[in-house]
Length: 239
Length: 393
Image 1 (tube, rainbow over the protein chains, first blue to last red):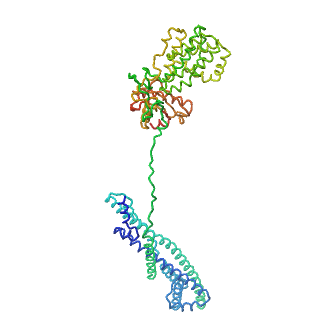
Image 2: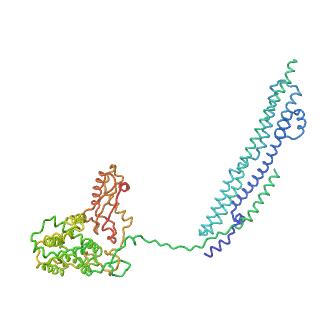
């Protein structure tokens, strides 16, 4: 009885001790999962900030766009800058419009199509930027628990082998091994749970932003098509 | 992105650092120092299978009756005692004769022709009522049998009371005379008749007292009487047969032959089972209080079930429970007729199942694989069956 008590006392069950006692595979799993957790939180912080920034920019641009300011003027001020979001779509459409009119557009339908294409391309590029790295969040969220479980299974296997070797099933002998093995699953869950939550949240935000961009693109396309008609009709009447 | 990775790393290291500090020394699990409580499993048989032995003997581990001197071994004996014939309750007959004889002598003098049988029966009943309760109690304890002789005078007094009013000295003499012969054969029952009859003629007013008990107890008494009168009765058949035969003899009672009527058997213990161990409290039978185990009981049921040609699909057979009560001898053969009774289900199903159960029991005798050392436990067996059991067999 005393012997067992002594043995139990020698077992350090602090986190660090548990980690150091673990086998190589379990250690690697733990380190990998810790890395995944760091990466997850890095993405979460990054995305949170970038989405907040994008929303702010959208609001600002819409305010400027609908303020009645001349579109030419707006284009001129924005043209020199690196634009994102709605501003990028606006600049792309205006650039296409300018190019077509500088050379003298032949058909209004062709011009309309080109402008729409330009806006679509910009939109998808912007959308991609919003959804970038969300995929890794999804992967960590779904695979994290499994990786942790793998570490646990390996850890328990080794601890059972140790039991077989020591021929003792005393809880004091078994417990540290199992605790160490379970640590792997715990880390896996710690990494996966925020990843899943963040993924769902950011996918929703990205969807909202892209639908907002689509709405703006449709509206701007309608405005441009009206402009085209107004500009081409006098010419046709002149001919 | 770099900034956010850095932030994330910092956050993680802070969290880990906190975890290392706070979780590094988990609270020691303080196990309450509870002393183990020793639990003993006490077999319920020690309470339910209590046995009465020799009251005066010291209490020993194994209950045992008084040591028997008669070492002639009687086969299949179940009841402890010194006699050569295995009888269950010898004292009962022994008592009856006493009273009857006391009254018996005068009878032939006054009435040479005994009254019709009906009356006889009634009379018997009454006598039994008075005596019956006591003998039964005594029957349970064969040991005290030697003692009964002293009590005998006690029962007689009530009768003696009735005579006092009668001034006839002859009766008193007769009463006194039989008393010493208090150990007659169990056959003395008939003599019981005379006392009553005799009493009746002598003092009718006084006898009215005894009469009232008749109607009140007639119900019980009649049934007992009828049972008793049947010579075919299984348990007490022997005794009662002897009683009957003796009763017929009693009618031509001869005082000179009284010695011939005396019971030469030792009054103590009617059984013939020998006991070698010294007397001790705990048992009337020299048994160990053993009990058939579940598997042994199942084996017995299995043997019956194997021989049971059960007809499936009898209507109303679902709730039927058949109870077979049989006596077995040491070789496993059935002694006498098994008693089969049943309950639940429809009447027809019951009847069919009862008869099939009887056939199965008779066919499966002799029963095998019953432990010989537990014969006391299976000498008398009650087996319960229900159709659902048979389906499993």
